[in-house]
Image 1 (spheres, rainbow, N blue to C red):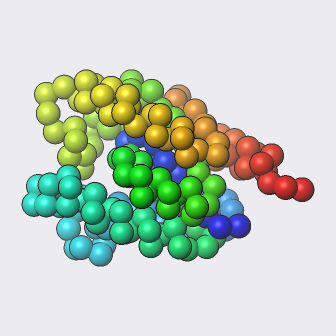
Image 2: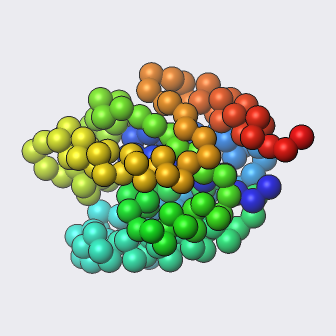
Length: 172
């Protein structure tokens, strides 16, 4: 098996579900944002502040290209990874893509206390999340092999659904 790649909006559970999925399937786990932070020695908000979103997206694109060359990893991506066509291409050819779908309400609930979200540092996070979803949802769907709903569901239940759905896709 190549890789299992999780895409979806912030707060969908990509990192949490990715870790559990990797453990369950005995695969390595990689989080593209964490990999960027380790490589640069700086956190994502700092990179946004210093290099802007454009600078961050450059780093992200090169990290995604590298991670998609792996084999046998569960990869959690940042919410905006699908904005660049090069990333969508790399993700599609890098393995099975699972879109973790979460409503804007669920995203708000899960990100409200997180200070590490540069795009939510404003007075109306609900409006921002709604706008991001409008742009990104069709892109997530474009590259997804499987779409899984995460709202109000325990991570273990989501992991089991992903495994079941991927088994159904696999040639027997």
